[in-house]
Amino acid sequence: MVLVLYNDPVSPSGRSVHMTLRALGLDFEWKNVNLISSENRLPEFLKINPRGKVPALVDEDLKLAESRAIACYLCNKYATEGTKSLYPSEPEKRAIVDQMLYSGEWMWEEIYIGYLRVRWVLYYGELPWFHNTDGVREALKYLDDRLKENAYMAGNHLTIADLFAHTTIRFLDMLDFDEYSNYPHMKAWMDKIEALDYYDECNNGKIDKVKEKYQALIKERQKQ
Image (cartoon, rainbow, N blue to C red; front, side):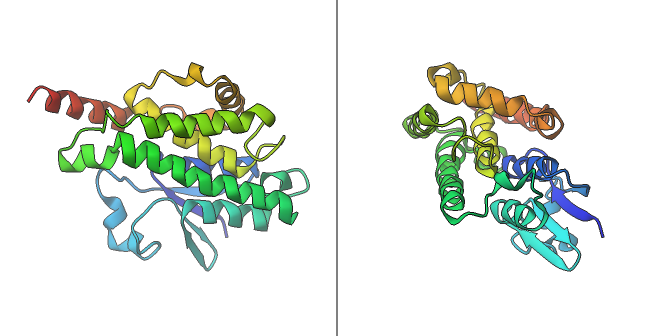
């Protein structure tokens, strides 16, 4: 049975899982779940993930949600000798990857909830919290400092922690963020991620339509 990924490509965490699948060289079936149209609240999707969140994965009888859990599962089950460094099995190395995955959730909170507030702009008539850039810059500095000593977040090899952190950082493009050059170690790391042969397939152009709507709503509300 083919792996089935339920996702909306606008989702940063969903794109991280997409990149994990490609990094592992896995074939899968894509089932699109349009968040703008609330397809994630349809009964058939709620049978896959009762929380109504993307991404979700079906692997035979297993129905799995939560993006980081999905990525870890895929690596645990399907990694080969050539791809096992994505989520290493050695306890010490894996602990560092897990640490970076959890710190990535903090970065997501600072960027998405504390600054961009995409859901609140699209559905609840709000504006981004333009004043709240300190948390964003703190997250970026944390990552930049981490990358002074290492080529990647958890050492000198690409791991799933890098894939998740990168899609989080790049979501700042929703507001045309232009401060990446202030964090040179992070910027060099971003360039390496974006040079991956599967990066464009998983990421390029995926947020454009939602970004257009998001920015149009902001401009409209700022005129009021």
